[in-house]
Length: 504
Image (cartoon, rainbow, N blue to C red; front, side, top):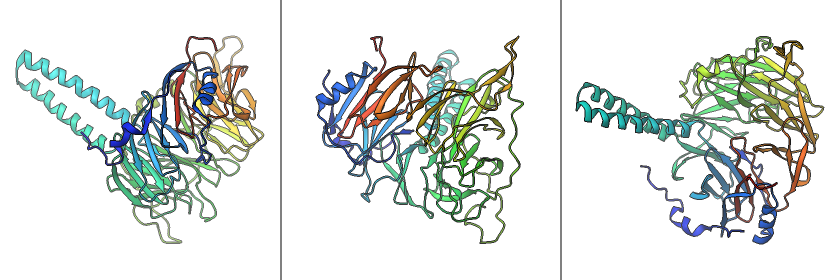
């Protein structure tokens, strides 16, 4: 069992109280953390369509400058340079960590992708095999079959031990990478980066991927070696004025990132090789989104990307100026919960969605780099898309929230059989001055509209079914995972709500 962190855990009982009855981040740090008063805030909350109060919490002496949803936790950052982890299903504070340098986090914290799920599966396997051993001992005693099960149990325990070492939370503050134990907030290690980070990290069990501000590359930091730089993946541009300003995304076995040169890159992390590079028409400033979509359509007609051969760095130091860099080494990335066989299924497509400054929104096949469809939005896109079920949502800088069908198909008018994807995409609806998707309820989706209003929308038609103003809830989470609505006020009030059977 992991040791309890010396990070104010003993003070948790006094840090908050329940209110009376009555890895989506909310963006940049909030400077205004004023308290409107509990009754004023509760009146606003009661007017929302989420009548089922799952839990409410009030920090007595802590304010919230940013809130992030990641896995089964909520992370609250405070102006006093603290990170607070909460169980998002129970509303219980798990731990509090104080940044020793008293500097704010450069970006929201991240959890190692897929590791908590992997640990959950291994724990279930361990419980199952323990029952099998008990049953076998009762039936036959300590024979060969029992010994074989015991050997398998030892293997599962070792896998759990290795996975637990990678079950971490990571964040960067002033060029220092922090690694905390996810369950208790204990500081595992820190590492001063040998490069200037330019975007939020993305972590898996053994590696942390961090874009650098110079020379358009994504660095790979080794968790086993306390964050030491192992290698980097590099685009094919050499101009120092070009950068990667968006987070890289890992989806086994590939690392994806967009670059200022207008290309989306996919590298195989197991081999270190470039898989594909797709060129858009102008610079990319939005983070790519990977979405696994299950369907029964045929995408063979999708166009492959043009061939490209970007340079990659060798392990260790960067190549000397003018030298030809060698291919990046294979790193043997561990599984992160993705099912590779499922990704190859005829009824499953891994989509990569990304918007560009060329006013276009792209839907690519993440495995091949082939374009499935492209939609001209009449406005630059710099925000990250959010996909839920069969719809993907993205905002343009011109101030409109677009809802697209994920896999629009041309169909035979007689048989209704699919005859190929619609290359121009299919816009379901557009909300002027809309900001972002929030969550999908039982019969409608909720989005953040203009002037801080939450709009309840029909997913297919875009018909507005309700509007709910928010004046004091200045931290409202996007949650594409389930139907829980999370919101907070900077003064320390946190709410977890959901729809009920009551009237809206």
